Length: 201
Image (cartoon, rainbow, N blue to C red; front, side, top):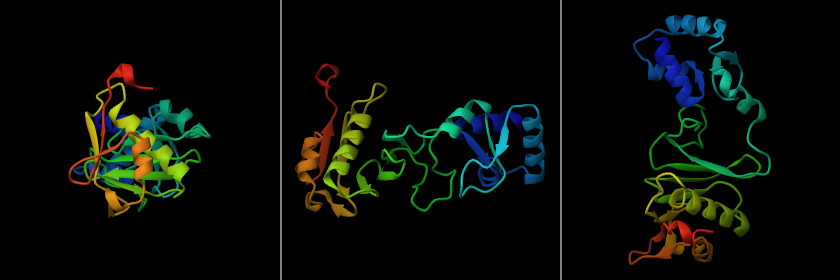
């Protein structure tokens, strides 16, 4: 059981009762909690209240402590895929968070607020933050750069078909999409193709 707990702690970064009961269903919570307590005594885990909205008790690995204490870098936006070990999807109870699925991406603005979600195989984009053009432009450039130009396994292309529940061709952000490198296809979708490394800015 300890090895399973270690694997989950490394994958999610934080452990709580609902998460452990879902991921290790055969074990009763009384047995799990006793094992967690022993691992805490052995300095393998640190108990505390790390997240609002996440039931107690909560445990993290010691290596994650500096990250949770410092939080996101102020003034810097960031994004990750929903299945990333650092993703809060499936860990924190938040109605705004999507399911933990491959192809779903989330982005936070420089104030630490969830700004956008790209889901349904990265085809459906939803803006949650500011509706100002400048904020949406930053988000689109982050989406394009992260998914099609990242160093590790970049996507050959990124296709967006809907924005905030509307077909992308009537969403009113054509100019912003074009600035971020998206092109229109024959079906009215917007495609961002990966560029050769030497052509990236």
